[in-house]
Image (cartoon, rainbow, N blue to C red; front, side, top):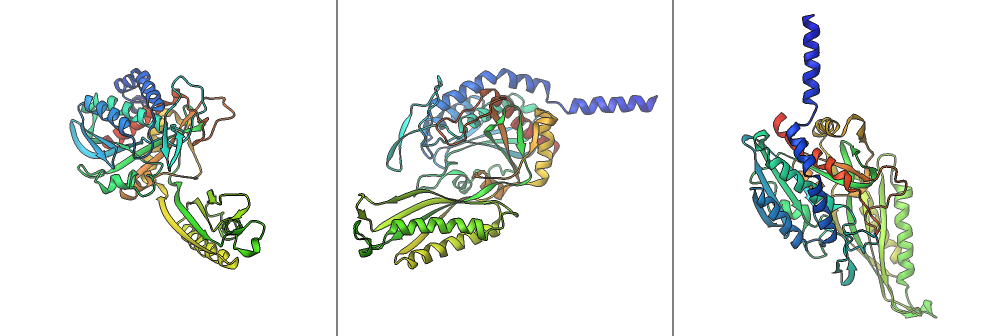
Length: 426
């Protein structure tokens, strides 16, 4: 009888431990409307990479109102809040990206973006077409909730609001790399870091994650092709850089289809922009190709970069022209620390429900959160933002991109509990 009572007591104790603190949970539920309002404010007032001045000001004002130590101007527009718990311990960082994209919104929302700006010399609409507005609002919510419960924190929480995740403008530094360079992971030194990304194709209430590589390394490349101009009626008098560009693009794809072992890991080469010519009857002197390479394996990455560089030059030479390449690394592989991920999954299942946390395969999107993970162990996961039952969600980075606000509260719960569990169970 005594053993049975002990067993029942143990079960009750374990079940109690497998729940969020009631007072924290109540504060999260109370703050839901405020989080949604913040999200809609940022959606209606987006700013491009390295230009997030108003966004940063609003974030900083909020963190200061919570009594935090606040640093601004990190990596141009980055904001960091430091929340010290009542008890000593480790330091955990939570990160949200804050920049928007040069995309003109097509949604008919009361908080639709009508902002415009100049991007690479062209006037464009500006839109939070990747969900960074939700990331900001979620982390602001976590900051407000945890600031009310410093007595439950063994250590320090560092809130990192990072600019230019989509990449700084050409010729500028920015993003996670510059934040790290300017000391964001020091004073106090960060021991672990967590981040999330909303996903328009994952149902609200669902979280997806995996250990090790979850997102790809990203390279940006430029190919400059030199030919020889001539009249369009006499192509034999010149060297056509547009034809050479077409052959180079075709050649690049054979690196993926014929030289890359896609059984080991996926890889992608995409040419996203071609610039050449002025008139229908003029063969121009030059052309420029701009694109991206995505890899999840370091050996494949090195091989693809080497072969593309060789191929562009060789193809151009074969047709009487010349091609040179420039490379810029955008991100490394977003790598989830296996041990930290195992613990994080337990926490995420507690807040979302056992059946609402799913394993996922790696994707070829990229994230500069990966640079933080190069320095300290980290976990990155995906949060559902699709209205359940939606069979045709719009992709990220498109004018119709849409997120269901009801998914934000789970994000607040997840990051709050991840921070508490890391600090209090370390």
